[in-house]
Length: 113
Image (cartoon, rainbow, N blue to C red):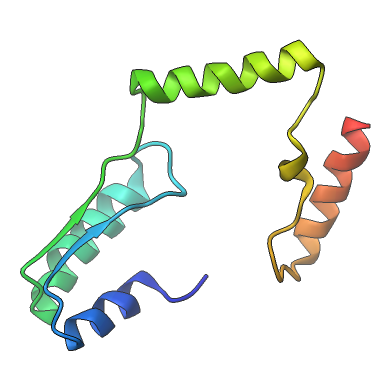
């Protein structure tokens, strides 16, 4: 997906922006990509390279009680109404042309019917 984080940061610095917070919405826990790529490569190395004052990262939900409660609610909902997955799970991303995605979505659709 674009724009790439590094390119976006460089572009904003050129516009005079100096402080950033990265919010890795696709990640639910800390792992090598958040801890190394974001925290070291972007927050430290890229910040120094481009002259940003501060690049920080929002923490992932990990095992926060509110996040666990939300997951519990989703599971309870699916169990109570007999659904295996939500309808949005079976949708493809807008403009997706990845054949593997198409095949996997079709497999899940057949499995869930």
